[in-house]
Image 1 (tube, helix red, strand yellow):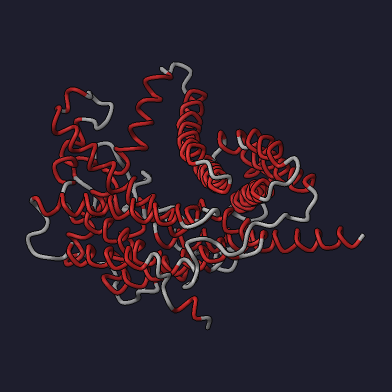
Image 2 (cartoon, helix red, strand yellow):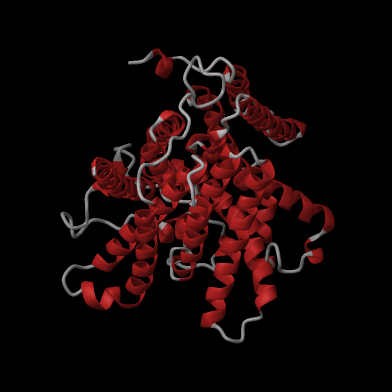
Length: 467
């Protein structure tokens, strides 16, 4: 094994040591519930800022900021820790009546009072801090904070990338309309599997176009524009979350490669606005009497605040009920069954546990508004705890971070095809608001499709170069 995989990067090591110390401090008696908890929150934000500055100043190649591990750490810290706390503190300071039902409906007021210093908040922070520690292993031990291997030009005709991306987007739209009627007669859920595959193909084509732009290939900007327009179809017909994550991650990576911080931040904000617009337009199609702008504001509040508050509360419920739960905690590798294709195991249990978490673990005030079909999630952290206790939590987090580290190293130092593959997988690698077994299964399935697709394209590119 290479020494670079064993030893941490010395430039990031001080951040890792500080994060480890802060992680240990979160377990100290008396820290939570007073001034100590606010010191922890402030220190975690300063720690992330310190890490970001080190990575950003390390080199002219800032691809490290778009690595899966760093993206996951950033996503978790800000969207599941900082923003919810800011919202709760703001609402508590100015009063719920100042916001009406926009941020948190009256039914959810019980969640507000229990979020600060809750067990769920602590676990999410600890997960983020572990990620800060492991970022030191994201780069080779002797690197100066950058990828040693620059992005090289893909020797693949742009017409192939464009053709596949447009074909996948159009196929996805058709499938959403007629797929179930045609294919489910032969194999149950076949249309869903085809939808998943063509969505992965589209995202991979978009990532390939981004790699071409990062290598300053001719016509790359136009390719990204065309594929972005083609994304409208999948976004409005069920693939909103995956496509928006892909657009945000790709725009962020390209902007950093071109040394434009403003463009990087703007790409994330633009992707968020696209997400909210897609949800609003889709709802307007179903309800012609919908008041668009009030609903847009409601969706904005839901995606930035309310959803996270629900999620943290459900995670807290899991942690508090673990000693009395009757789940089978004998197997910390329970999630492996998710890797078995349903074609080989037709009676495979449903991986989505949304109904279970709502009924057993979420706040009672949520019950009138939720049902067993609600997509509630306690993040990646709840399911291993509920199904396998602390051993399950350790195994799940170790596997998650191992995947993120390996993909980050490939993104930084791999070939252009490998970098495109990692970029294409971003929507699945950083999906923190997910059930863990489903996270593993979907990521494995997406990785398989992406690898086969890129292998075939690499062979095609090689054949075309020989001619």
